[in-house]
Length: 296
DNA sequence: CTTATCCAGTGTAGCAGGTA
DNA sequence: TACCTGCTACACTGGATAAG
Image (cartoon, rainbow, N blue to C red; front, side, top):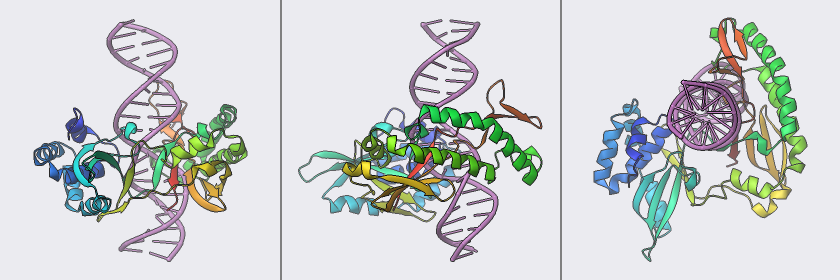
């Protein structure tokens, strides 16, 4: 089915990864040829038409359809739900018919080459006061960062927003991780928090569609933990920038502690936090968008 | 070469507060 | 009061480098 906004979203949305959502939606919409034609028309109005069509060319819906069949379900309709949180992590919604003719819904969470299941604010893990103390260090670390980049890459245009690795970033992230670990015991409502991280709070059941450059893998049972054990979960450092979550000594998830858009951001405000070689920058946002992944 | 690792990045929505 | 503007938090993947 098409919502009021569906065709406009398909024409105009340029969020990262949306081309895979569109391709799967289109492929499943084969059961509604008239609507499918309208969607193809919208795809032709995108800037990346060729890429979307290429993904469609290797999107065989058979895996999805047979997974439904195994459960005694048949596909009767499909909707496009990009960025609609009300349906849980699903990007595409399948309307399915059971043997008794009751219509149900199963979502598809569509991903390309990443395992991140949820972006989560650091405020769930550390207190306002901890954030305040860490923020105080940001100006100092930012100037260290600029020194480091300048030493390694020279002119600002060689490194600003060029995704360069940084020891200073590692060091600041490490300070944040120390605070996360220190505070974990005191984090309230761990059941609610972990339910959100694992999507066990989803209003609609979902499958995960993991695209590669050749096709996709389907996972009908997303990994989770027994939420009654939420208070037994422990945390620790993992690699350079992750906090790992453990249950009975087994890693059940990991979270990348990260700046939302880099250590320094493009400056949109009138008064930049820093100007370096004529380039205006803002301090980064270290707490707003951490990446949580479930272990496979 | 391909795959894994690990930070870096973009787009959108909603809200608060200023202001025309 | 309607419209900006700045800001946070949410949604995703990209790309450089290392490892195999």
